[in-house]
Image 1 (cartoon, one colour):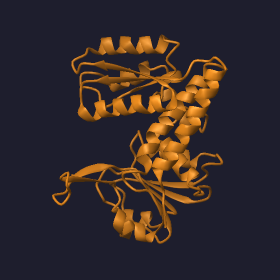
Image 2: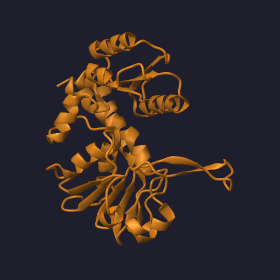
Image 3: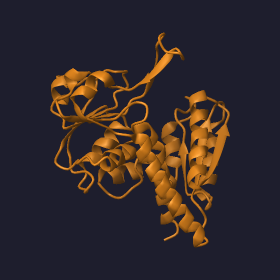
Image 4: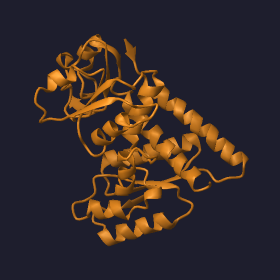
Length: 292
C-alpha cells in the first residue's frame, strides 16, 4: 500500500519554482509577486497569510498582504482591487474567504482582473476550465491532480468518483479529471450528501476523491479493494487522549480504509501541502504570461 506523501511532492514543486526564479534573476527579470487580500482578523485566515508569506520567501517570490478591518465598506475594497488590477508589479492575487456579509462576493469576484485571478474564481477562468482551455486552476483541485500524477498513478481511463460538489473543490476537480488531457481523461461520477446509494457508487471507484466536509465519513464500506483514495478534507476534532486535546483528521477514516487501498493520502500531509505549491505554480504562470 502506497502512502502518498504530499509534503515531499509539494517540496519538489517548490524546488522547481526556486530554480525558475533563479533563472529569472540571472536574466535580469523581476521575480513573481503574489498579493493576498484579507478582510477582518480571523485567526485561521491570518495563519494562512503567514503561510503564504513564508512559502513565497522560500521560493524567492515577493508577497504582499492587504488587510482591511471587518467593517470595511464594499466600495473601499473594490477600489483596492482596482489598484491591484492596475499594478504591473503584481502578477496575481487571492482574496481570502469568507468575506463579511455586507460585501457582495459576486461583485468582488467579477471585479478581479481574470489575468491576476490566482483563485480561479472569476467566471471567465471558470468558463475556460469547463471548456477544457488553458487557464489558472483552483489551487486545491490543481494540487490534487499534481499529487496523483507525481505519485505515478494513472488517471486516464479510470473511474473517478468525486464525493463533494463545492465550487471551490468538487466541481472544478471533476472537470480537471474529465478533460481531454494526458494528465486526465478519466470517467467521472460526482456525488454529494443527497446521492442515493452513495456507498455502492463509491465502491465502483478506481480513484475515490473525497471533499464532503464531514470528519471520517468514508469508512471501509465505501471503498473497493485496491482503490486509490484521495482525502481532501481536514478537521480538528476533540480527543481527550491527545496531549493537545484534539487531533487532525480528514473525511476518510484512515486506519480502516488504508487496509483496502493500493494508495491513499494521509491527513495531514497529503493534499494540504499541495494547495500552496500549486498556488505558487499559478503565480509563476501569470508572471510568465505578462512577459511573453
